[in-house]
Length: 103
Image (cartoon, rainbow, N blue to C red; front, top):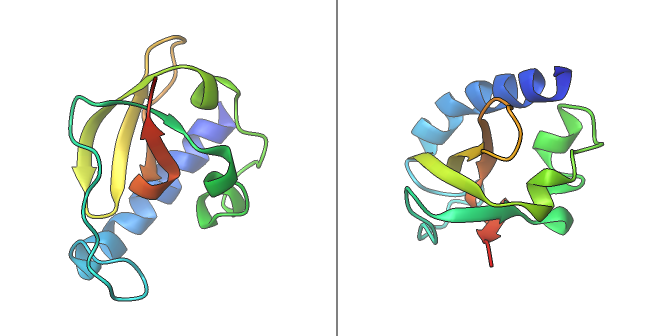
């Protein structure tokens, strides 16, 4: 429960940064959005570990984010709001480069 709360807070804290970068990554290069709303995705462990989002929270991410499909419910700049339906959990914001299509 703490994990989801911190991840939501981290996503909200970065929302203003996302808006200011206007769909640009931190190096200033334009980034094409590889996913869209309604896509089913899973987190990429190698990209999520040691990320800013991992450092802002407990680094023991629940295994379901890597193993089960999550639905992209919203996009904002470089971030996607993901809803996992397998267990009742809050939606979380992850960078679009930290997820990949499920399946």
